[in-house]
Length: 134
Image (cartoon, rainbow, N blue to C red):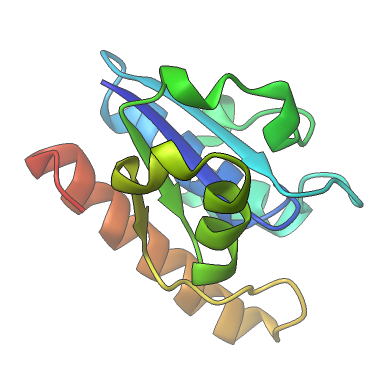
């Protein structure tokens, strides 16, 4: 199984989901990307992953969708509908490979609210890892 997580800048949501799923499913190919790269991977994500014993699975630098071969993935998880739309405008044939999780961007949230979003991502990743479904 090859899974790609997508968010806006590959700084928060998608690298978090990638790291958690890589830990849970080392037998899968798991990656993440953003629509555009503006900032480095969020340090708060690293802190959250430490509590999950998954920090070693976190990527060092954000990556763009353009750097990925999207056709190679079995499943593309878009954090929001806007991410799905961005992909399908460019690659309409991928529409059936994309699911939307509806995860809000925690980047500008207070820490407590952001950590609730991280927990929401964690639950979705556990569900995906255990059932293969989103």
